[in-house]
Amino acid sequence: MHVQGERLKTQADVSTSLQLAADLARRARRDEALLELTGCEDWPAPFKEQGLLLRADVLSRRSPILGLESLAVHSEDFKSSEGRFGYLILSAFSYVNSRNFDGARDMLASAQELVGESLERAARLGYERSRLLWATRRYDPESDDIALAMSDPSPDAQFKALALRSWMYAGLENYDAQTRDLRGAFEQYEGNKESCDITAVAIYLRGLLGLAVERGDHESMLIGQRVYETLEWTPDIQDLRFICVRALAWHAFHEGDPGRAQWLFKDSKELAPTLAWKVMAHIDRAYVAKMNMNEAWAAEELAQADALAGEVEWDATHGEERQALVMLAELFSSTDMAQAQRYVSIYSSLGKDSLDPTLASGHDRRSIAYEKYAAGRVQAVLGNVKLAKESLEFAYDVFSQIKHPYRAALAAAALFEVTEDLQWLEKARAQAGLFAKSPFFRRLSELDKVEEQRVLSGLTPMQRQIAIAVSQGADLDDLSHRFSRSRFTLEKQIEIIFAALGVESRHALRAELRQRKML
Image (cartoon, rainbow, N blue to C red; front, side, top):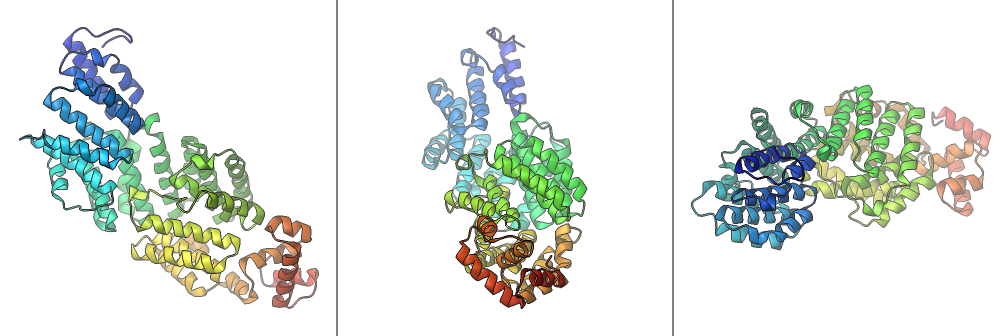
């Protein structure tokens, strides 16, 4: 092995460094791999081409643009048929990841000319063509290209081909087939751990765990937990580890083990790759504490989330990170309407595509349903019942149709809060039945008497909050600040509240609310 900064002189030295770099890259130890590849542009043939390709591959894992730049600088150095084919395939891979699909098509067309009689090259080309199809939302799990990718004898290639086919099934909303292929991929991995690319394993593990949580799939969760515990986690895949730990925490919550869930959420906070994700970790803990009636702990975690959220540049966030804004609005809506509306405003300013959740990285109706659910929660906070109902009903219909019971239960529970229609409460319970040990299910089961009292009041959720605040001594200025409403509007709301409850004073209001178990 060479000393850093010294040029390798013998082919044996070069071969050793190349093999070591390839193993480090496979194990997601990118800085160490790049160190071993120092000076590879001066290596003798054929190691030079192999070193340049490996270096570009490592860089592309950090940023597809970095990978493409490295390939472009050395494009003339790939002279052999094998080297040129590798250059074209890796360029196509990076183009797909940077959303330059035309560039990817051009590279794959050129690579086709170099396949010849090589079955290995045909399999690699089939895999990259399939990735391009998936990325452009053209789902065909039975295509000839997928079959070619599956024919590659390499265990790592077979793992990736099975996992990619699972995403094809996800695009078709065939989640049973998706689950089957993901399980098959991890069976392949567990029998060939020393051959599989750890970054790819972590990516697809995230998908398996997330899907298992959504569907209440205990067998898949057990497989995912086993893989998680044996995987060699490195800083280069910490973001994926964070998502996996969150999934494990939510599974513990669903299994009626809130203590373990809280500890896992604490671990996720330490692993959070961005400030926005750290905010989400605090929100997760606040949610679980609130569901377990620990209001003091929930308030503490919410306060920490709120403080950190003020430091986040939300315009620079993407995907699931932005869901933190919706959850902050939800959690604040029962105690501080002005703060809730502030987060709604931030979320709304990011545009209609604020959320692009990547559960299983699927480009399907789930993404639209997530967006509609978030929009419904936002409209509920704003008091726009009609708009909230429309969005939440859309989300419920999709999640129930595709058999994602946890999300369907959340949507139905939200609809019950908005409409106070007990039919939605029953639907929420039916969907959450798969998570019978969860505090969420227990809360739904205990709502009967309390919610019946609230329904009888004839008050909207916001009017109930105003009624409670008034009974506790809040004046119009306090109410205006808390609920972001004018004094005139609040006076009218108080008149409606008093009439609905048949009271004429704050003292009588407080007594009535206590009798109805609303205080």
